[in-house]
Image 1 (spheres, rainbow, N blue to C red):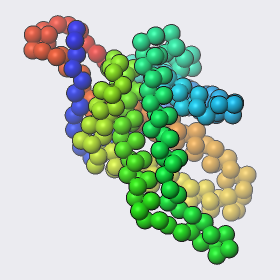
Image 2: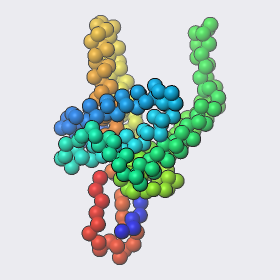
Image 3: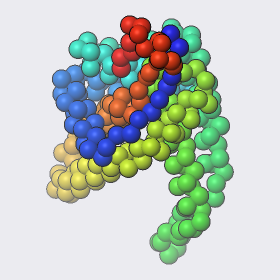
Image 4: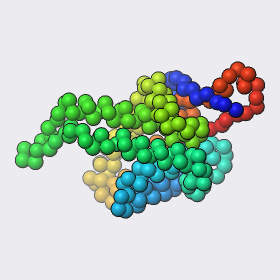
Length: 256
């Protein structure tokens, strides 16, 4: 059945719901914490190899899609498994499209390296110097980059879109439609992180080992919570519909 990819608007209230539902899913499936750590450890080890940073960017879409599949398994009351991270390698269509997405991501990252530095440090005066125009340029380009690639992995893997440009356009369109809810979502995560860092800094000032332990625990909980909640936002921001009215009578369904 030919399908038509569509985006939809959500409300600001969804931002808090994504995080709460992610925390609840993580409580019920703590194995997702270990899978998240495994994913980042794998990417870190690859990045340490010669040419590793390039390969890590290329492979990141594949393992991200694999992690999202682990989340779907958890939502469907199945036991998430670490091997699911690598199942995409056995799916030629999705694998090739995601590798292509990784290559396109590399191309988009390069201009960030060529932009003028927005912030410089004067070691003699011990102060930061800001270039407003350069800072604005970096923020604008990074925002464009983020919106283009935010949902691209999920669109390619779950919605079956193999045209990279269509996937990037759909991701950008969804982010643009939902810029306020996504901003609220980011602010909530940032606020929680800032509050936790303040608490950890106070504890570290009294007892450094305990502060380091709290920092580690916070990271291993924050990382999967952020990934899961962002995937939940994808489920709310996208809808898959038949391409024609006649096809609506079929029993084909798609579930994420």
